Image (tube, rainbow over all chains, first blue to last red; front, side):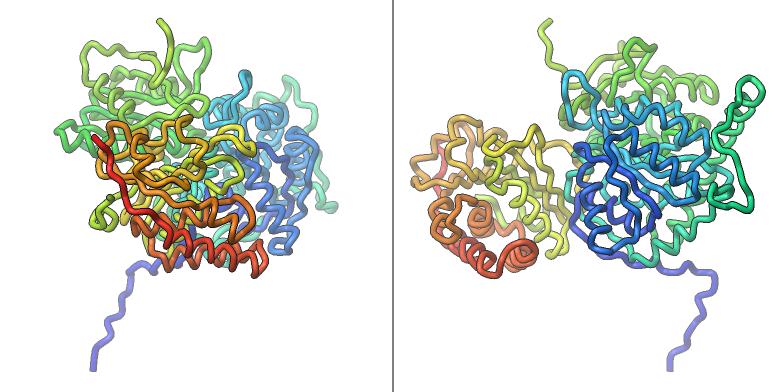
Length: 407
Length: 202
């Protein structure tokens, strides 16, 4: 006879998912189905189209009971989302590049009205010249509109973020819209092995949404989007910033709960070989995978290389970034977009500001890579690491990886 | 030829060349889905431009026993599969091919006639007349399934069992029973119609 020892205090085993071969866009559409939004209003645009197509199929086939609004433009998509969210609905949408640009006016309204809309953003270059491929110019242009911005690395994380985003947005301390960024084509159209969680487990994780001040609650009438002027606008903006500050804890809280249920852990940042690194790169998105491989290669050669991937772009975790880079002597930042005419590229600027405020103020060198979908092979990232080790490399804009130009 | 030990232990990288409408992306995706059934990790990454019927297309497949991290295009493939013989001489299909790698070409010509494509690469050419096979089985020039049959013959990058199952399931979702059977026949014929290998002069 065997004795059963009660395993008190041990963690529950994670809820098992189903391994699937799926691209990022299709898996995100599954996440949308599983969180059961009341309303989805979207307009198709490459590379986001797969999300809209797949999700509208789920609606048409009765796999989810969502009011799907096939709108005439992205401006209309976000406007319909805002209307539905004001009414008290759980709302989602998805877009890319120029679609996001057309939404711009209403992005701030979604945030200013404190509506927990979730938008899946398949990052894409902005025109002109025309380019449909991956680039972060679209996302960088929305940073100051008051949206929480999560950035995934791969198909699995795009799906997991899509689920956690609902929880973060609807957290009453936050009550802000959340953008779930996934790299256009590189993640949206790349088929990978991932885990699809059981429908009921996801539905239970996100829970029922209970809006604080729904417009349709006729017993408690409210005015939405009233005239503010110099009387209250500043106070309302300050409150928006408070919601944004709270989002940091909400992101971590959602991640902890997700990890306890499903076994995959996320944070504001994702560090790789950073503890004893003498040289490190900071990056967002899918390039981190290739960079991990480059770090491994450099480590084998005796270079103490490391990687810092920022998972939460807004609110920018300044203190955490500074802490993570504390011991690193040579820091590089890789940006997948240009900030034309600025002091430096967007992620570089955030990292420099974070270090100047909380850190030792180490010099930070920035490179531009992958703009407009330009491929960056591992060798080019490696060259950037090696350049960082060179004392002659200056802080600030160091140039471009993989640029072809006649000089 | 690619060693079987490579297939089991290491990351296998493939590059596909074809034209829009020939099922290049589907072939790459089916291979990835078969790898899932084999319990392995994978990535199927089409190189996108402005997709239009007839335009040259490239797709990449990576298969490994460990999670695949690299998200850049495959620069040094173990295997290159060319679905359209009219691309030969127009697209550098052997570019980056690994030493002892294999170039699999849909062609009615013998492999020795195409060995020149390898240039300086120390690699192997094999051919399969996939176009003839699919014209006889499907009645349409969509050579991807016959090419998948040939691929698992030259290198067990995924199991034939898994690939057959994926073809059955996926095509079964959108084609008639008869059309699925015709594709399975194309797969089998592709599997058995691979030429003997020709090595490069280099």
